[in-house]
Image (cartoon, rainbow, N blue to C red; front, side):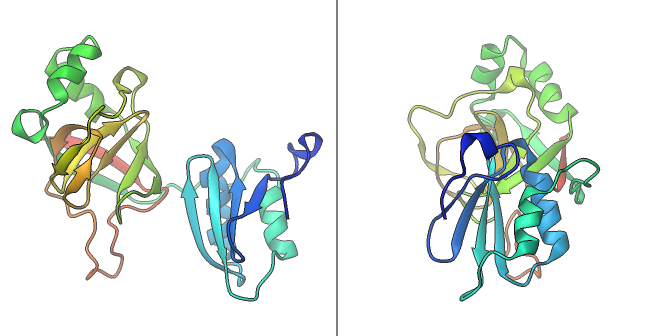
Amino acid sequence: MGKYTRGQSHVHPAWRWISERGLQVVTGDTTLARYTALITLNLPEIEDIIPAVGSLFLVLRRGEAVSADLWTALTAPLAGMPVLTGTLHEIAVEYGGAAGPDLPALAEQAGMDAATYINSHAAGEYSVAFLGFQPGFPYLHGLPRALHAPRRASPRVRVAAGSVAIGGMFTGIYPAGGPGGWQIIGHTKAVMFDPQRDAPALLMPGDRVHFVPL
């Protein structure tokens, strides 16, 4: 099954099969709304739904095909459809210093002093767009445009677990230590991923985050 024609694109999703069971569906800025619809329907042919930037990756159960209900969920108008808001998490962050070595340079780049930069980062409410890179790594949407910054030209060999960072238009939190190329602005003691918990990832798509400076 392939990509639909341009004339149909306002009605039909563009999709492609990644494997015999994996279906990537282009959703644009409706990703969370489509994700909400699908998890609410709990369709029996879907084994997993993985949101990403502008798309959803659907894993179908072995031997299943795209049903009429799934097709409808992917093509139905979104007017009036509730968008997943999820749980609000307040996450305490130590900004700057050894915890956030890239903050001074980013503040200068944004034309701010460090305190203004911290207040700007912590002022808004973020939403979890999707998880990736590491288990439980949240890509948080809602970063003020003035704070957007490219990833480092040379990634660090090791970034500490709990590091709060900026990469492009997203802010995120490293669940585990390891190599990383995002700009580090702070650190939290919140445990982002614990395989022993009933829900291993602290944050899920649609959840909301408010950072609290220490």
